[in-house]
Image 1 (tube, rainbow, N blue to C red):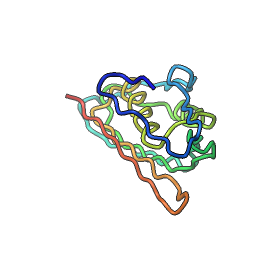
Image 2: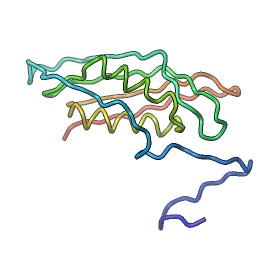
Image 3: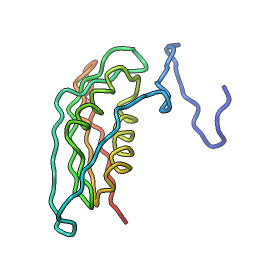
Length: 140
């Protein structure tokens, strides 16, 4: 298998057909925003999204998680209905826990340009292993 120079070749000792959904094919719902009317006044906004689901590319079983998102807006706030539809659009996406949190972070930063954001994916126990993935961004 050819890999990019410096890339780590995947190790698949179980012989499974691991097929993550390519980013270009995810068709995630767009995140809408609205103007934050108090720029310069820092507030912290917390969301807890308790019904996140995606598909494990290794097993094709659903993964369930609670996504926690905390951010400090700069000039834009995320619109809640679009956030709900965006999160729900992962339901048919094959993606690893570690990758989904980074995808959400990238999309959120692109949409809102926050001063700071922290995202946590608290995935349900599967096969006696609990996974928690965290990622953050701070505007320079």
